[in-house]
Length: 278
Image (cartoon, rainbow, N blue to C red; front, side, top):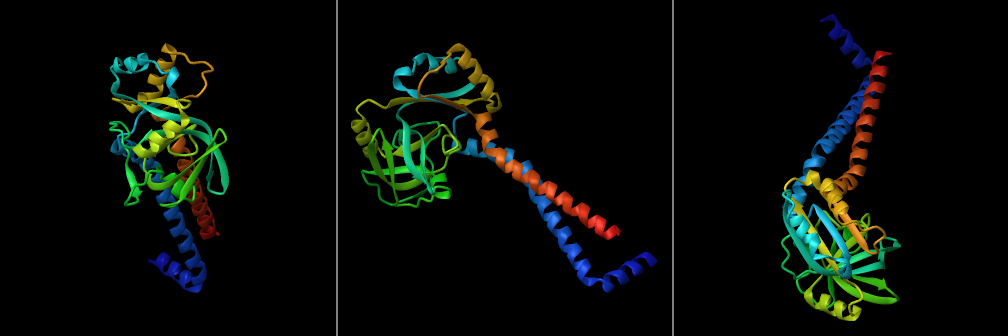
């Protein structure tokens, strides 16, 4: 009882110091709680999002001339594979467009938004009410990071030719959706897609193979086995990505920030304890 009275007397004597210490403890508790919450929930959040959007666990993107029916047969015969889907698309390599404050160069996979695809169907989170013949759907990252809004124009420079579209919607996806990827997929309504296909006149015909596994954590192993079966050394315009790599890339920075928050919270607690002790 005497200890509590003595403590209360010290608190009353040093109200400002006590308030400062309480604020530090609250900040440390908040940072610690947020950091641990992010670390524990990030894994399940990404898994749930992939499942909700029915996105692929493995994607292969290549020129149409390099595609072989044996690729799809290989995955269909793999007992760990749940679904396989191949679709034609337009692969425009070395495309320039404005993204944020800079001119960005990457590879664009132009898909027909009206195709009845089963894997990674288009999921628009924002869209215009009407569709025009020069519309395009882009990843939500183009709004979040690229500075675009519905109705804005986006212009692609490809082989000294410009192709301009109105952004009619933003789609949500966990794959091929950011500038961190070797390829970004864009969705064109059928009229826009057919017009672009006619303009390119077969020079950018491509193919995309999408695979969903029974257990996505085996994606790297399955893709490695595929590459052993079909080695493609030095093949131009050939890109592949798997679930484990995508998940690691997308969660790396977030988990790093969460760890920094936990470490910073621990430092605050240590400093607070030292102040209280002396």
